[in-house]
Image (cartoon, rainbow, N blue to C red):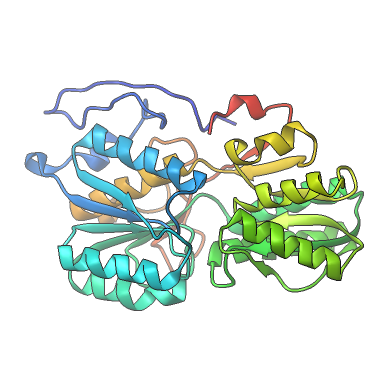
Length: 348
């Protein structure tokens, strides 16, 4: 699998297409034709994320800012200081009032954003979404991969750590976070087929993309179910919350974790053996890709945004449309799995 962090750069004359600068996203093969604009037109595009100030979305900002540098479009990233659907709605209302050209959005709650995104599209604003496979009011939803397959891969690792037996608990940012719910769905389906002696206990824990909430709610769950030996984490911060709990409680090699994470967040727990496996995709590439689709849509190239499209970005070089009834739902392919053996390959 190609590294999601390969870094390269190239320059082209402005008459041919956007000039690419060196950055965290490998743009050596980027689809310049898709984002070249007529008469060098520039657009205003806001990327709205679930919560600002956490490592995951800090990394996405890197990709958004690189897109700005590479193309000259007026793009930026914004999000609430805490994961809150109402705050995200208000941000989008403000962007509608500013009459931006496009909104790229990672919803905290798909249901909460449907009305305001409909309003945006009714005003002629292009909407591109991510981690929102059931969102209706979007021009295009771009997923990094098949969500259930991602969850199944997490469970394959958790089940192996647990020896195929025992009880586990699962976390999600929100019960309305569609993609994260699908990851857990895929994990549970895989567990029932491949590890029938394992059992998920309790309800899925809502942790609001906050490592402290993860720590607290997991501690409560393990008090209620003292025989839990596994933690399945959908939100990125769970890797830190679970790692802290395992380390502080002396549960290394007794309670196991597999879930979304970043080396910069969970690295100390991976190095210490408290967390054995994390999985992720590069949010910088996702942010860059969403902005590419926004520019293409604004340029009247919607017919090109379909299955088989090559964005020229790692993981997005052959988009898939899994649902014939929803051709605007597109998947990339690929994720990265990290253990103590390869964590030093990733610097975010």
